[in-house]
Each structure stands twice: as C-alpha cells, then as structure tokens.
Length: 123
Image (tube, rainbow, N blue to C red; front, side, top):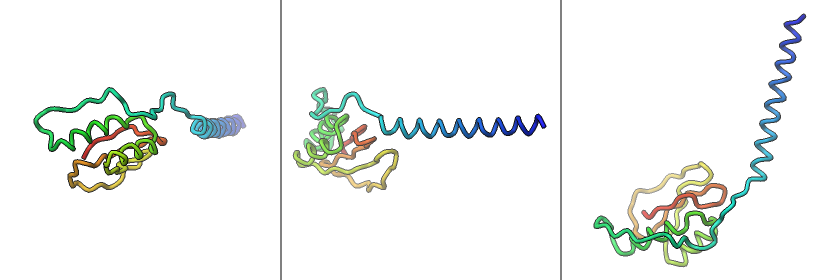
C-alpha cells in the first residue's frame, strides 16, 4: 500500500507544480512592463562614413533604423514613413517572416517584441 500512496502523492505534486507554472506564466505575461519606451528618436546614432556605403540615402536610412530601436511599433512606423522610408516587419514576437533579398536603400526591416522595436536595419 505504501507504493500506491507514494505514487498518488507524486502525481498530485506534479499536477500542482504544473498548475503553479501555468498560473505564473499567464499572470507574468499580463503584468509584464517595459521600463523605458522611446517615443522620440535616439540621438546617439551616427552616420557610417565607411567606403562600403551604397548611396547617401542608404546612410540616412541606416541612421533612421538605429533611431527607432526602443520605440513602439506605431511610433517607429510613423517616423520612418514620415521620412519617406518603407517599413518591413522582419519578425514579431519570435515569428520570423519570409523576406525578399532585393536591395532597396530606402527600406528598414524591423524586429518587434511585445510591440517594441528591438532591432532594425537598412536593407
């Protein structure tokens, strides 16, 4: 009889642990916050003056791509489009999207995580 009781206690313990994990996951996701969200462009971005730059527009686009990192998706898209750039979502919340490999010096690919731009590059 001791073996059946031990198995029963083990199963109940595992069930409680899984329930606690799921509860923590759901509650943690709902209450997650970000301490610093940019609503203005990053002023610490600079022009890359190396000789391998394609065009002057490409240099400006790279600076804009740097400036939107940390901004919300909406603010970043608004800024980039107001500057005449094309915006392409490369990934969002861990889901990566198929992208063409054509080069455009006015396009910015952005990576998003919970509505924030965590990466951006000119391509």
